[in-house]
Length: 116
Image 1 (tube, rainbow, N blue to C red):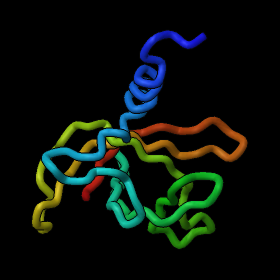
Image 2: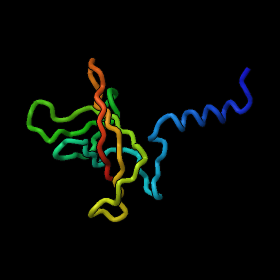
Image 3: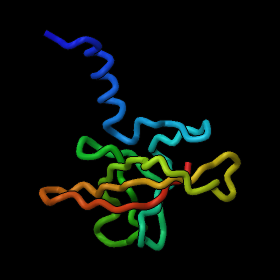
Image 4: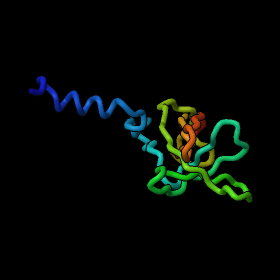
């Protein structure tokens, strides 16, 4: 037998579990999507997200001419606004958690920012 308000509690748990469910900050959609500019911490340059595959939702180009041209990533918005994006009308820069998906190895997590 389900407790009272089971559906409401289930919905609440699902929406509060992931920080990416907060899709707007100051009325601007901050959901990570293809084309969002991501700059990981300690990288000299960032890149725009490209479509991923069944392995990960996105891939982040490495701006390298070596054998690895992109990395599988998951991006979560931390919800912290860092400021307005320079040169983009209405753009916003937000802090993100970037998870580099390990292929048979542990995932690596870093922080960075995303411009939308």
